Amino acid sequence: MSVDAPAKVIPQARKITTKPRRSDQIFRIVVTIGGMASLVILGLIALFLSIKGMHILIDEKFNFITESRWEVITNENGDVTEANFGIGAMLVGTMLSAVIAIFVGVPISVLSALYLTFYANGKIKKFLISVIDLMAAFPSLLFGFWGFFIFMSSAEYWAKLINKYLGFIPLFDVPTPIFERSPFIAGLVLAIMIIPIVTSISREIFDQTPLDRIQAAYALGATKLSMIKAVVIPYGRGGIVGGAMLGLGRAMGETVAVYTVLNVVYQVNWQILFGAGGNVASLILLKFGEAGPYEVDALMAAGLILFLLTLLVNAAADFLINRFGGKGR
Image (cartoon, rainbow, N blue to C red):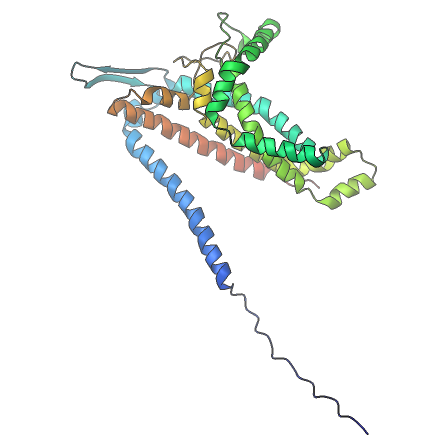
């Protein structure tokens, strides 16, 4: 007796489509709105600063950037009779403090990221990562108070040592023995502030180093240090540059911490150990409370210059990442 084989049921052809699901469409819309909202907000900030401060830039022309005066003369009725605005000294102080912060903070951040990625283990690694993430969330006012009451005495001693042994270099010369509240101290405080940000970004990049490249380096007899130099650093140099530029932007725009540990003086000071200087953000903080309408517009113009300078730094970061941030082979 033979049993008939069951008839083969041919499944219906599945329709292949590239149309995303409804949930993906909703998510894409939400992400697009969020991204466009940030661009719109930045554009509105730039527009507001331009409307408020553009007439000051037109009146002062390049003197607003090159001069180091900030004078407002009013009559008995409170009307402005003469005004001279210039942020040249503040721009120099901004760049000096930010460069010191990058010069000190980035190497420490990269070494910390390498330690957390390839040397720290277990609970120590988790604890240190938590501490770094917590430091990134500290308000700048706490860094300013810490720098003023605790850190300044030690930093002043270091400044005296640098002046003693390297004072023949004009950058480290001091016209009078005033080492308190100098760009050097402000730069060190800013370096402490940017270390958590640069460390977190560098650690994330180092974690993404392809495992096959690491294992291949070990298979060829490389030590851990040699592997880091040959594989990890070339692979992550774009992230290091991006983190450094992000830290530079943070250092350039910092207000309260710099205002707390730096003497705001309207003169160009290239001597980083001398207790005089300032930056654009601290100038705005210092003058805004007592400024009249015309001076407020000048402060908005200073904010516009700082805004454009930050955009320029970000553009330079993109260029450097694209130029030198290629993945290591």
